Length: 111
Length: 113
Image (cartoon, rainbow over all chains, first blue to last red; front, side, top):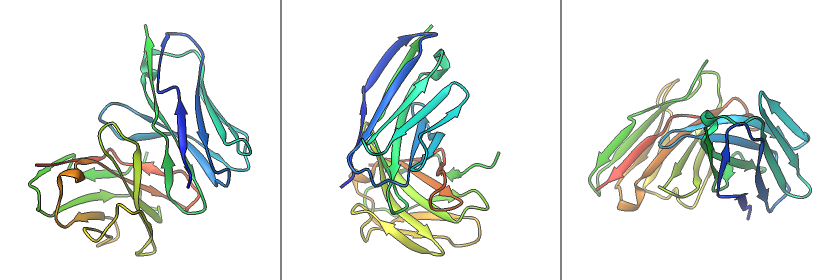
């Protein structure tokens, strides 16, 4: 059974710092991995999708990497801003359509 | 930019009552999903729907739950007899193809009293 774990559970950094969020999964047989942002009490905003054949994806200050064989993905946020404060979720898709989510990392960027 | 919409944003109901949560997926999408998130817990998959039938459902999705696409635009989740433990945020999502990005709606917060 696929399990997704995110470390750390919470992170607090000063504005401007570069940071890395980690996601690990137990079954490497995935189709893709998706990173989301969730603001308190709100829905999920898709940030990046990495297909299983890809190593990384970039969008603006965000860069996500995928090492399928080791069951790991990282989300790199460059030059963090207070507006980046949110919970970041990773989710993997196996050979069915469903996404399996991690618990999330709650990020606070202090001005 | 097209987006998934959900109504209502908040639903309060009494235990044992039926509720219907509504979603309008992105118009050219073919795959539809319901997830839920109990406060403080992970987002959990409930059901996926394609070509007017359920393609996969989780253990949570028991006989109390049903989904329907009554017309060309709406996608609904019905809970027949709500329980206290059904209180959660319910998210609808859609994707163009099975392997594509899933786009989520803003959610419906269901409170069962």
